[in-house]
Image 1 (cartoon, rainbow, N blue to C red):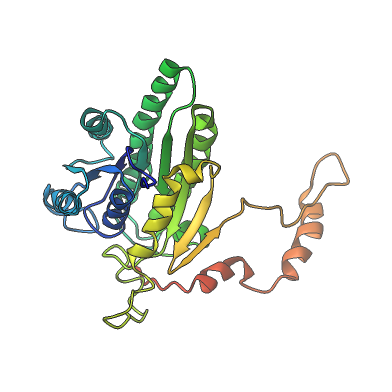
Image 2 (cartoon, rainbow, N blue to C red):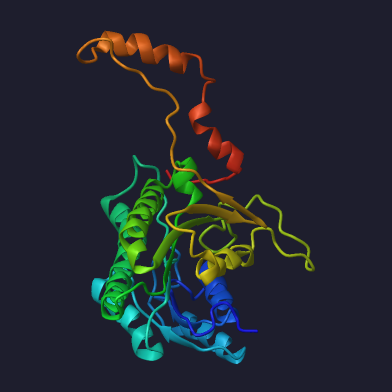
Length: 316
């Protein structure tokens, strides 16, 4: 019996540690040949000297388990390095079939204290990094489709966050980037569907170096139990979305953690107000809209953050 991803090739960005590592290992377990990308900086804020060590360690782990993997040390936010990353999969394995965008950094601060550089750096790595690799992978699939005269195989799995869904007071840069990734994903899904390519986004919840302070208050399991916040709970969904079985899953946003997958709906209209005149006036809006919010429980708009149970203590 063949494996679900046998004969497929994949790129996983930010795969030297945490979620990316678990995702790369899962894709390899399912039969894919993997390009393990990581810039290799030790700081979760993108600080420190870059190194090929983390990517090579994961690639070696895959090879030791009988899989195929090569390491790529590069910055996905750099347009030319992203081009080289996609090309490395094509040169090594003959084609690219799967792209998993995971690379990211954190530079948390309240919006009134955040510097321009702290904003720009997070948007650059997360949002531009997702765009760069997607751009070159999409161009590859479009070219292959034109050559073959029909659809090809292509899968994109992007990484958003519950910080986008529920808000995160000390992460305006991160939340904005993750929201942008959802928009990029749905646009890409529509644009590439005719070529046989799907694009989906996940909001994973996992205990990694990126989230060590967020989940500091969550109990860790005993030695013989799997941590409910382990990246290993997230990786199987990525493997599924990368597989032929998920051909009809496209343009979706899924929350995943601890043995749970939730398919999110697109925003719905909660209420509608129509003017009785040619155009709204301030007075008419006040008369229509204010009672609607007056009748809603105070703080209801932000109830999702409480439901998610997240804890985040940002710098001032």
